[in-house]
Image 1: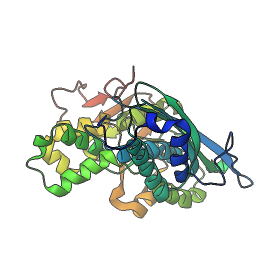
Image 2 (image 1 turned 30 degrees about the horizontal axis):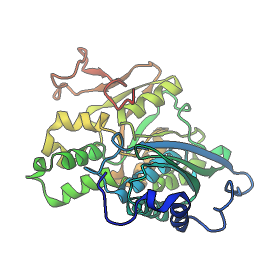
Image 3 (image 1 turned 180 degrees about the vertical axis):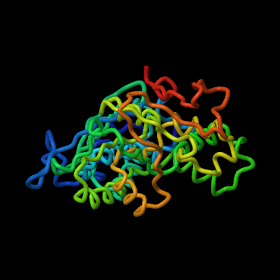
Image 4 (image 1 turned 120 degrees about the vertical axis):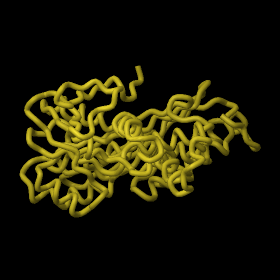
Length: 346
């Protein structure tokens, strides 16, 4: 972590640092041993927790402290979006070295506040402790009516698999941050858009609003998951949880044409499927509902394939576009997708 001028966490002490951080929290909620949150009648509480560790999820080389804060908040809001929930607030457990500049911590909270101001919720509490390495553990709270929850286990055979947004852009942004010389031939627009996709991902709560508007017209529940660990990972989890399989069409993967031009089709497909940290939504919907969502959002959604009663999860290649040599596929050009190529902590 880059050191900056000004006081450190050790200089201020715990109470002094807390007083600075309280400005990012609602004054009528923080200050006691716990926050008290009221839920409207008929609503349920949705809870999710996510951890970010310096050197694993972020570093000074690629991410400014305000961007770390945005990404930390966005990751949790994305989990709420995947459940169909409306954000209420989040708590932040933060471990810091004594040498950490106070300015770094304040910028972290400024990034979180900026994300929450745009997408909903407030910082309503947390904890501080001393550590050799910076880490954040965020618990986000949301609310939802019981009959409107999106689960992973409700997909049924014959449904359409839909993904929001291009995938692989966060991985492209990371590549540009780690090896800037690789982007020499790119337009500034593409370079900045992909870096922004990595540093400041968008939790797709906007899509939830459209799904909620469509939901009363369809009897089947919505199965959903976010794609923070990769598109393939999300499809595999949805299928495994629901006891179904899937066939995805390689020609319909949500690829940015500019990304294909930059790194080639094979790499773009791999980043799309396994790059991770895109924070989009992957949905299993009846075809009519998928078409209605596509009509509302246009190119923001891509119908990738369909669920099957056969539990295998495969990627189908057209006869004119066989899988690359690095793929292992059967004679029918069906590639079995795997968890092994996506991000795994252990």
